[in-house]
Image 1 (cartoon, rainbow, N blue to C red):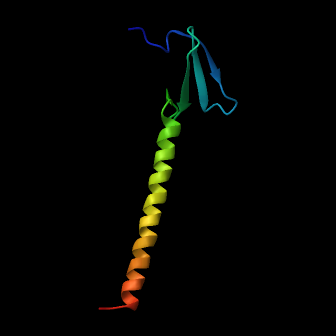
Image 2: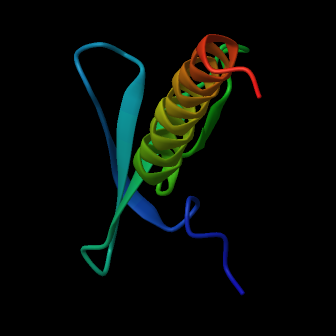
Image 3: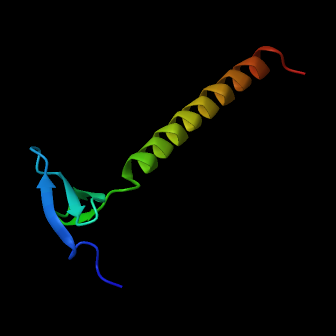
Length: 79
């Protein structure tokens, strides 16, 4: 199976220099992103992963707030 990056007709690098798109001869566009190490990597799942991470962080915040509310309510009404 050929390497799709080697089959790319061209690369379009964004003005920021951190994002690029490999355009294959079939017209398929593959997103790439430069990492902290300076190496390029496939970024086709990056936006979805970032969305999931942000949702998880909001969920953790909600659990913390709810737990604090529960503890305050329990302290006001000891059994």
